[in-house]
Image: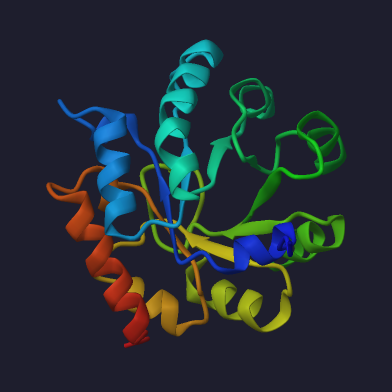
Length: 218
């Protein structure tokens, strides 16, 4: 039986949904993530800066009961130990987080490991180091990364033309601008608020995917 490589698995993503506990209001995490998947999300990243490791492990195990039967990867933000203990599919690491070799040793050869990048140099370095995919952004201003200046569409264009590993454009992306991001060369976009805070996450996911397919830089 043919098994795709880690990078091949990442190449097929279009909509990368990232959780935001502040946007749930009175809804459950499972409810909102399920709606995003029903709308077309290909991968889920569990991100919660305020939760303890034990809380995140519990959240991850709940989500895995839904994502694993659906064939949707569950990635843990920043915390490889949580990913390992929960049995998640991988981890996404920031520039200041664990190095790839240590994360791979902890999680094993089958885990998907991504790296956030905010410049051409960082993107090239992450590719050389061997990450399975990279995040590129923040493309636009976003409250989830208030200390980072937006990199704009120029970095998206550079990465689409010069980087061979799969990449995910992230940062302030929603229905109003996703066509521009897709038009600049992004095949995968990560969305936080536009899904997690949407009144109807399922419909929001569908609309984002439709506008991605049209891809318009105007």
